[in-house]
Length: 159
Image (tube, rainbow, N blue to C red; front, side, top):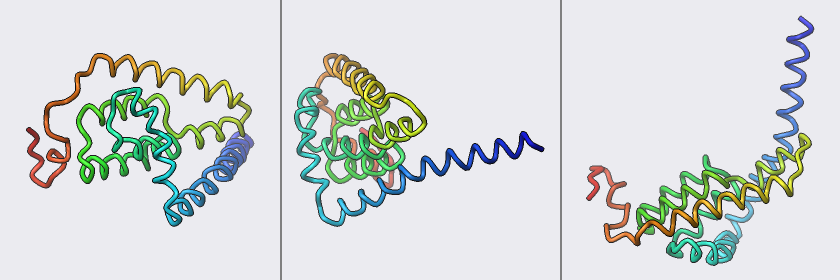
């Protein structure tokens, strides 16, 4: 019974530590959305999108994925693909980068709370994601196929 009690106490303690990080971040996101600050922040991502040869339209979903992770970022990525007509190449590079480097604020803070070196963790994640995405971008030719928005329609037909 003591083992169950210790496990429950430890789990609740970890949940509380993570909630102290995640809840304020979600509040900040809502304020940024309400004040239309995210568009300006997305423009800061343009050097990164240019490095990978991506269109400027991919900056906003990249920023959201970096800050808030794949679960929230996936919705933004789908919306951007549908509304902004992101190319398949842009989407592929965006996802490759975010697989290695998503939720850098949230995840880093969560790991710092439990004792990790945040600077080392952040540098390693960003460095690996940059290197892998840049190398893959060198081999991907600019897409001549239509934007993926045609694949995300009701009929699901993709050219």
